Length: 330
Image 1 (cartoon, helix red, strand yellow):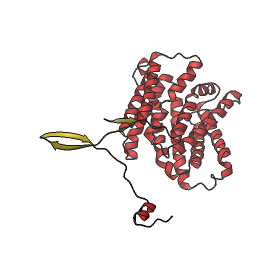
Image 2 (tube, helix red, strand yellow):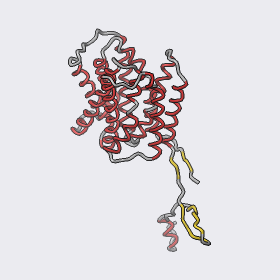
Image 3 (tube, helix red, strand yellow):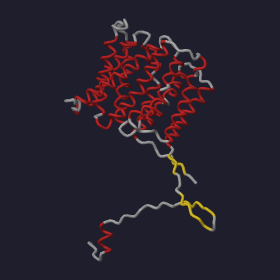
Image 4 (cartoon, helix red, strand yellow):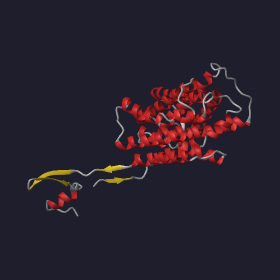
């Protein structure tokens, strides 16, 4: 008979869960900021403030001095990919609904294990595949794409580009995490993202908005959240696989929905069922089945399968060997 074990989450998994909760509650803040600021400028300021917070957090440890070129290249690439994803998603929201954007963005959940298999040559385990499937079903139920139709538009295309960027960013962080310093990588990523956003402002015809405490306060809050997110992401994915991290991130719409509920949104039955699927996906990814091994024997002309009881192999210590040889060191 097989047994299922549900181990306690690690510190890294708990940290990713807390970051996901914080991130899920930021949609309302972003909506407030975009009323008085353009998307490129807000993303750039947010990343710049986040980079300054990282400097304040690790400044005394001097870890930012003499950043290796390899970390500048890797962190810069991840930062550009991350900022590109934010930009595409934000620009896409100008022409499509938030629910449709949420559905298209949710496609990164099945994309990550596929890219992990292609790029890292590491196939997800059975628990991870089940968790991915349940989480994706939950995200579809939360987004309810059948309400907006299935035709593609330019906004859909931009959002899909952002989705691929998010998936690629998660894979790259997992690929480089063990070989780099998480604090330096977070700093380089944020600076690269800020520079890309500011450079693209004149390209899309966006201007610096008039100063207002509205977008400034939102940028400060989002800067803190972005700094914490990149620091935790680069640290936690040293031990958490991209597939497991993706399943944890999939719970983000749940927390966003709770914030929306407290600000006046209505939670439907479909939304609650979708949230349940996501929670089930997170739990399923943690389950580790212990399948028994069997020995096939032939007794009395009948084939029988007998479970093999696996015992822990005893390895004698040096003191045991000494005592057995007739000399006790004590």
